Length: 75
Image (cartoon, rainbow, N blue to C red; front, side):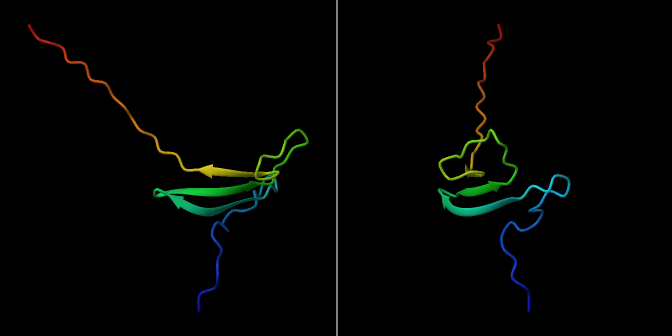
């Protein structure tokens, strides 16, 4: 029987700094994932976001490349 393994449990602790981070997939909107991410490297100057101190919601982004072609008329 395979053991249960939660999503994103690999490399949760940075072995150099000891900081904890965790990524939780929330839902898909139009085929793009929306994740909530926790980063434990909190500093004294850091302010809480609207989802909490150290937490961020990461909407997926898609990059589109737009190219303009100029046609040179040969004489």
